[in-house]
Image 1 (cartoon, rainbow, N blue to C red):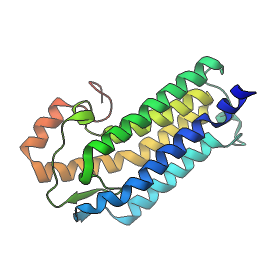
Image 2: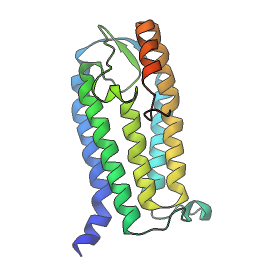
Image 3: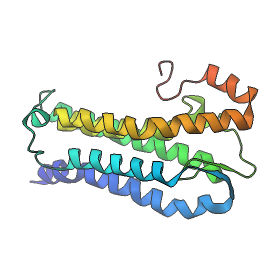
Length: 194
């Protein structure tokens, strides 16, 4: 009985804790005024893709047979491996958010007195918040073991990639050669790979 509760609620608790932290920390990010903002339409599209990915993972069945088929054998090992990947990813993302301090924002922005952060998790990847989110969704996909989990991860990549590209364009414009050197040294999302 207690393990059934763990299996039913572990992932929702992880994500609710993560989203609660993010929501509570958002007002602190307004300490620095923004000089440049991302278009609202791209934020809306990103939100819709996130909702679609979350629904794919949360629903018991999608009603689309191929999406509900397993790509991994489902069992304790996949559940706990997925839980570890999700927990690591979300914690890595939180570490990055804390490390950014007042330079963080929900939308792509360049803040007044914006700093180029290259330490902490930013020494491993240039976009550790995105790396953590992707790991969080990948962990859920592993635990679920169905093709829809991989589709959810693809939706998250589709949601984050344009934002990542815009951030990099603006950071390069703001920091020039310093950002170029950083880009040559540190991968975008996966250390030493991508």
